[in-house]
Length: 137
Length: 303
Ligand SMILES: Nc1ncnc2c1ncn2[C@@H]1O[C@H](COP(=O)(O)OP(=O)(O)O)[C@@H](O)[C@H]1O
Ligand SMILES: [Mg+2]
Image 1 (cartoon, chains in turn red, purple):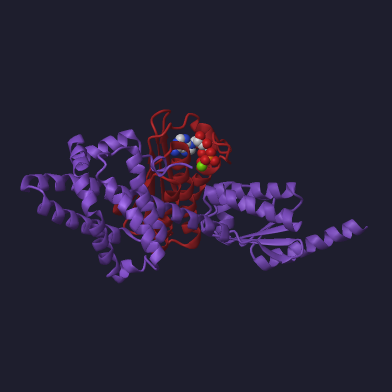
Image 2 (cartoon, helix red, strand yellow):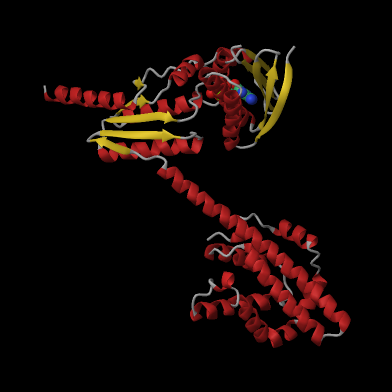
């Protein structure tokens, strides 16, 4: 059974907030014993998704949760916005597609950095991305 | 020059709502205009007392270093004082009051001191009004002047905060410039140690500074050390590649150093292809590579 131990909410209302989300993710990962690779992966994933909220949806929020399954510690990050949503989900998940003339590797790359990944979106209905990363044991 | 008012977005609507909140009615303004004569009569003694007060406290005294300053601010103070009794509270009035706050920020006088100074004014006016006006009139007149002075105070504080933020912004710009320290390693080799988060403004700035320096120094190799960058996400990687492409256009090659094992692995997992630039873990190796690249170029050129 997975339980939430603690949770934090960070609004993403300006570019600087991306740094705050990222720092919270990194600090938590380090405090809870994630190794350097896992911490870097989580921090980078947080950076990508927070930036997407800011750049593509004009703002939203991040919810950061500390989880436990009785053995390991997990960090779940949920990124929520009420922006335009994603029309071409398939292409975005595949990677290399961007509506902002950037690399288009944020979503597809993030998927490879975490253990669990869930994307819910629809045109005009906003976007919600949930990622989870666990300590090794 | 743009007015303070427009810079702060203070328009007719804001004026209406703030006047409503401070309860400044046309009757208040008319009443103050009627009190102008009394105000004129006491202007000089009120001002003298006011400055005696300011000069008797070291915290405020230091803002009046010499007689010339004192004369100048006394004149401004008279203008301020008479402004209260002109029977107006329009946008021009607002502009004038905002300047008070901006001027205080410039000389570094913080709101606590000039709020204390407003307090002194109010005491003095209360004193004159109760002594010289029939009881009811004095009280009503004082209430009107209280409204207007509080209104002035709100404007002065708005302007103070805005000016303060601008000062901060200028400092940030300066820091940003300082944090793009391009170092000349050797003739034709430049080094940029990047430290801290790369936001879009900073990315822009890095690109511009680096380009300028490369052209200025006629550099052939630009080493960018990212050991101090906390996260290399697709945005940072994209920025580095764009900088590399721009460097190539002005005839310089880019070497990326300071890439930790974690960062290398994360970049690969993200699927970013940074093979367009040589990457090395250690800065020293980067410098050696730069030297050898130059050596090769020199030999090539001489054959
Ligand atoms: N939160 C979001 N809201 C709306 N659209 C998004 C959001 N996140 C991603 N997208 C869309 O998915 C595309 C790919 O995103 P991503 O993989 O992060 O690459 P990039 O941000 O470089 O474009 C974006 O260009 C955008 O069209
Ligand atoms: Mg993105």
